[in-house]
Length: 411
Image (cartoon, rainbow, N blue to C red; front, top):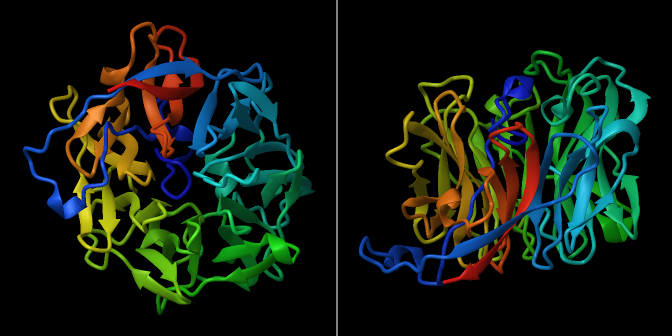
């Protein structure tokens, strides 16, 4: 139900989990927030972003220049990585294969977009790789995938580790560093399903010809992935076993890399699966989601926020919903500690974009829409330092899924 590293694959419902936005945050320290603290109530002007002729588009990243990136589906059901600037769509195309996508919060403001793209080369080992969860059928598998960098109006593929076929890029900072994960040539016995090769958390240095290096894993683990990076070089991601290359048991440990070391930020996580950091701000605050021991396959997870001063804080789903919401996932955080994500019932049929202000009670982003926008904000994937949010909206009449931009217009 979420983006990469907690995806449940093609069987997901229309209302995939995405992120929502919080309202009127200040920089008051998290531990100083009291239950009676006053909250400003922000209203958002929501607008749809144009597509490429298909019926499914999504905004997954927004930077401080209001560049929204994500994907747009074509009429043939393939999807292309997409960039919206001033609400105008740029098709980023692919590395030669049918599909590409920007799936995580990139955050770079220097004109760089990163993501994943299929090449025209057949997948030699029959691996579904991570792409199976992010592309539409019938072409979601069967091709080698590479992490990509798009800059100066051109997409290029990033190298894998020696012997590896597939890669995935998730984030980029303003120092020319890109993070993600990439295969090695090692046949990992902890892999399952269609996955064969080990993959490691990766950092590519764009200033050194896209040179790749790996990041250390938690002792005893064999595979992992980096999901986000800030301008201080702090990186978050996961460490675990190879499994199916889409989170789950690869996400045994949610980790922070800094100063050459790896730290498990949730050592007492309730379950050893789906423990996934999704974003880190410049302060080093981390958000993500963690597994529930009652749901082994990850159908239900719980959002969290981690700060150095307070450790883990659980972010609850929306209360008083019918059916009851039990699932929450956090996907974006800005410097004001506004956190956005999604809240769902156990079957992921009723999902709503939400915002947690400083980790407090969630607010349904749909309750903050300015009049005139009728689609349901089913997910929110990212929030920038202007409080602007992007995600995916669903038309209740047609079922069409649309990327949106939500701009705060009043306090």
